Length: 197
Image (cartoon, rainbow, N blue to C red; front, side):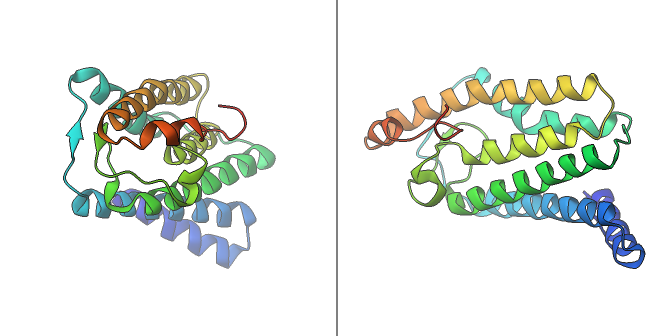
């Protein structure tokens, strides 16, 4: 995290002194990632105690793969995409991370990494989507993937996306068992993409 913070300062300084839009986008993307990581850290510390946890290793494994595997991208060589692809990448990272920050802020003290019932959040962005944090995170991961060597980066990103599906199922089952209102909420909302899924 310290290396990422140094890179943000470096990119921000270069973008303002050199007037390069590419560097400004990189600095904004990395700053949003730092904010998201900081928010998750704070919420991890102040979150509520769980009313119930999903038992067994598979839910924890799916959550760990979905949440941690994207960091493997940083072990791959950079791809040095052209200006257009870099802009698409930066915009996906920035918009996905901002969306995830908005959703995580709404979760507040109900935030959890593993499938746990720490509170039922039905308002704000959760009125329409049951898993907006994952939508934002995976959008950012797909954007970041474009900046690293292929096909390995694509495999990492796709494995992370694939892990979210069992992760969502485990969470939904646990919330149905814990909160009587969840089934009705589930029936009137989309899982991750409005109008599609």
